[in-house]
Image 1: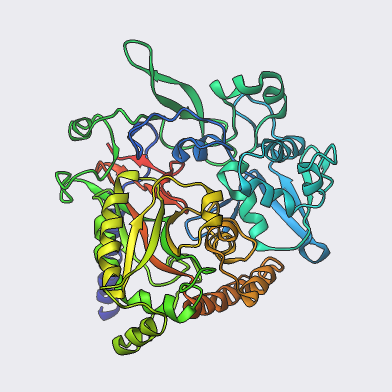
Image 2 (image 1 turned 180 degrees about the vertical axis):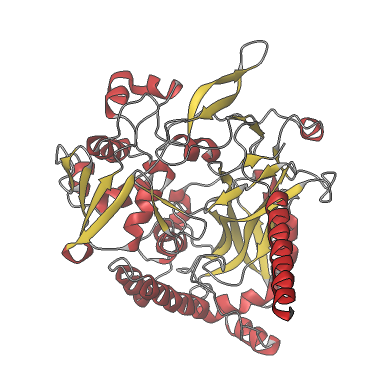
Length: 528
């Protein structure tokens, strides 16, 4: 009898458990196909550039085209058009095996010849320095770039679905090039036959395909419409269509006519709408002319760091949609694997003043004239930032003078010390593309603008290019960071963080590594 009671109790508990599980499953919404997503991008001007090698909306380009590989949110290398790959010859040879089911939007299969054509097209364009950097890492790429070869010898088509790439050096960064938005694969035939007209109605292999241009009553283009690619090589997107236009208004969002908009105002209630925040690889530094006295002295550069209140400066540059986070390190702390040590950087004021006095600074009655140059996207910010820096550096005996119209030649001939306020957006989300151009003696813009030289930094940046160990690269970057902290060729100021607002029924909206300028729309869906 007692055994029967126990069995009945257990059965009851089991039934209750199953009921609770069923209840949880019913309450957890499952992705639903369908729905049209309307997005207002950042910026007020319309951008109709649909070339992956151009400067169009990343939101559109990243969802219209597909690369051999892609990056996830944590910068891990993930399969794209390449289903898998093998590495041989100590990492110098990588063989990519394309997905058999991968097709372009016109139904044409993606082949290894299309991949080779797309990369060689990039190298022919020569429109961005990063394209040369990409070419120079592949065997025969530099010769092709210079017109000394008809093709890139390190790109070998084995058959329709197999491509071999021979790199000059093995390296993790090699895969970052292949995952970049500009490395989206194009169909060779249509591009060659249509030339520039191809990008009026482009064909890619991404999760969405071009549908038509959005137009106003006067037939002016005001945006772009993409539709779901039902032949996408993995699970097709849930969303039926996406429309992108900078002419969508805030009131359209409040009226539920658009779903995504930059967080333009605090009128967008956080209680009613969802807010997505993401770090943006847009970094601000104040560089010193390291070749001109007194800024040729690391101790002087170090001392001047004590005079600039970064938090207040970041507040000046912030908006509700794009706000700035103070940064003490040269590499932003949000890059995977890199957590800079910000301890032990407090400076003794008496020691700071002593250093400045020895260098002939610190006299408010006889200040040193220092020119100030600016390179920022938002030109309206320049007067505010200049006035702030002028007032901050005045107690250090510096009279800052704003220079707006200048040429590289004038800068090269200048004997007046200067500071250079730079907003830097690296081409790839990797420390190399911050450190190498800004702090390597041969990197541009350092070579022409800041003139910082440290042989050890150069050696470490060359070392990190060779090898497939993620941990080894991070350790090398940390060594560079320590040297820069000691040398202080620039003052790290802040990085940008972006905010988007979106409707509560929009689910699984995620940023890509590039920030909110690019959204992963493959997995987003609407619960309504």
